[in-house]
Length: 134
Image 1: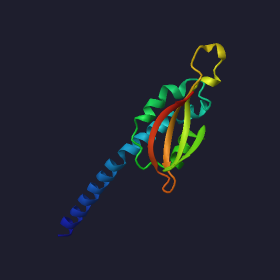
Image 2 (image 1 turned 90 degrees about the vertical axis):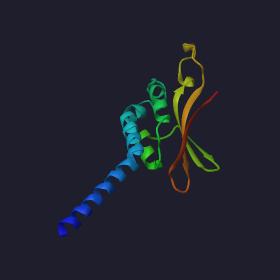
Image 3 (image 1 turned 90 degrees about the horizontal axis):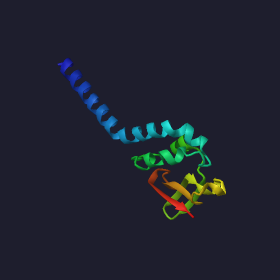
Image 4 (image 1 turned 45 degrees about the vertical axis):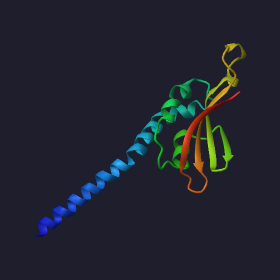
């Protein structure tokens, strides 16, 4: 009888572990993606060498459920700009900055950015978007 009860508890614990892994899978894959781009993303802080431009779409397509501002700051560093809005705060990271390029480059003098919007109270990520300044 003890063996049956012990097997039952082991089985229940294994189901709990599997369900925890499935619940954290999207965040884990996003953390891996952020970790893989982190070093060079920080090196391209002025968005001049093209690294951010080459990887930002991968960051847009990620599912960031349960992502906190602390984790994002650790992985991507200081945002280029911070904006306040009605639901919270937005962290803007430039992925392309035409204003920093030489005048004779012939490229558009705009700034492309990816924005991470956080809830002020919970510090969790609400959504991710992109845009540009002229």
